[in-house]
Image (cartoon, rainbow, N blue to C red; front, side, top):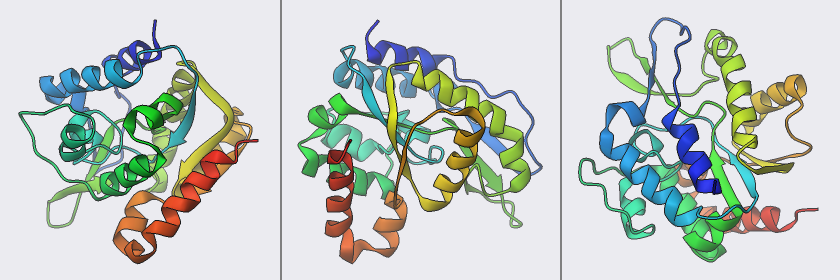
Length: 229
């Protein structure tokens, strides 16, 4: 099996049947929209049609407007079509993080070159939402609530182990977001998954709060990627 076929198999079998604290829900885009499964398969057949080992870029959990729709981490429907050449008919989304990631990918040499070397996903690979006091559902992170983290911790360790088995290099991984890194370090201490963690600012944080310094952050990412020991 190719790397891409393994990822497709992983996504096809994604389920979360565990408990959740009150006001939290999990969204499984692969079950909710048949086209998500289709475009995800197209993406991994196109960019991962080989057996090369990849380096692991670790996010938090999918956003509702990125992988929560397309099934491809940090990829909204705009970038899926304009950069990856895969059009989604049933949804049209814009995600802030996706803008930064694809600017980075362009600087790195384009999608084919980037995805030939890197695999992006999360310890909790399904979208999480929570209900506000106004009864609105908004994006949530797995670490937003201590009870939520403890509830999904074992699932995340199992998920990371399965993703490593797809063919990932565990000598050095890249963790997006400083708070995310704190929790990945906890998981790593318990399960001994990775040799070295390199921590980078999260694309959403950069795009929202540091957009004037975006050029420097892209350079920092590329320098970090190229400094593999």
